[in-house]
Image 1 (cartoon, rainbow, N blue to C red):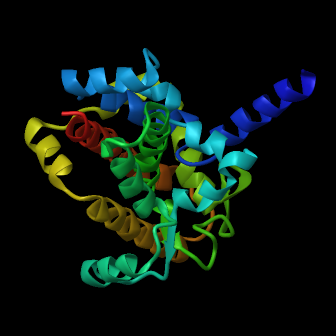
Image 2: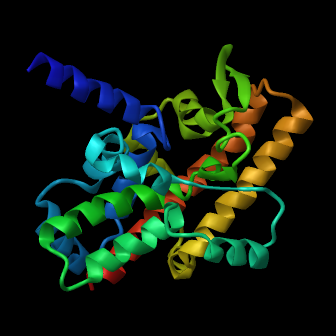
Length: 260
């Protein structure tokens, strides 16, 4: 009994330390819920009951820490060499197998739409989809293979040792110091025309945007050193705002399409 409690606590803590952090993913889920159609709300309720999307947003991080879902670890990211244009990027991604965040998003969409998939399987696919759409908007999840998406790129932030991946997962968000509901309220500001544009764009476009931002992040670090301070935070927290907002808006658009 005690072992199970401590195991669950460890998994929850670990999930809060990676992949936009728990706060970032909950924010994405909360923004998405604000933009769902009645049909999407009903379809989602059929799969997960009255559970909020925010409450399942980090499930995939917890699941990959378990033996049953350990194989899903690579589904959270895509790693590259930098410098490709959109055409080359697209061609490269299309040569890969589906064992990555882009392929996982497409798989989850297919599973939810498949009439032969069980309700339980669709619920699992929904939990994964919510998380992976968030992941693919985090730039360091679409970055360099040579340093494991910035995990091996050591920095100093707020006087403490960290790494570039962690900085963009949670460091900038933690410095802002808002709760997920405050973030959702403050970030969810897109105009109807901007929402329509974002939701019309493909997952390939989403991942390429993150890839481009990651390239800029590395360039900035190489030029200005590995001790980002207040100026770095002020320059980059708006990028965090927009990527989280875009993830929430696009998640809503995807769910509205799947359940219409």
